[in-house]
Image 1 (spheres, one colour):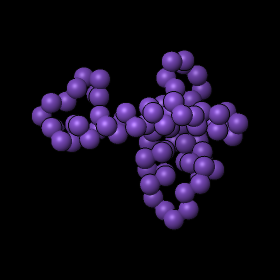
Image 2: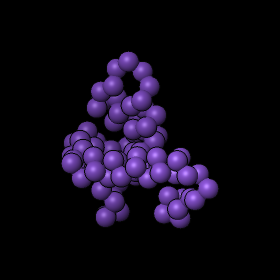
Image 3: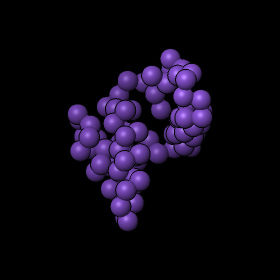
Image 4: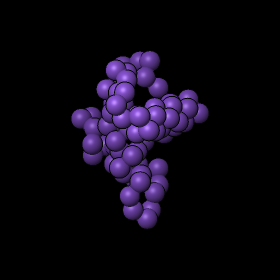
Length: 83
């Protein structure tokens, strides 16, 4: 997911997923892509976007959630990698 520097902007992708996918009744992949494109500096095509929805992305997001939950559980110990 983050090994290569390509068009996909990871921070915009994560924020679009968290805020764009968490709100509203209709949560579709097309809506997720639209949310990303409205947030990112450079929009990405549907094919380029959907090919990134892989098991490794799911693992990456799972790890982000685990780190975030650990930070919430112990807020006085912020890891430098999390910043």
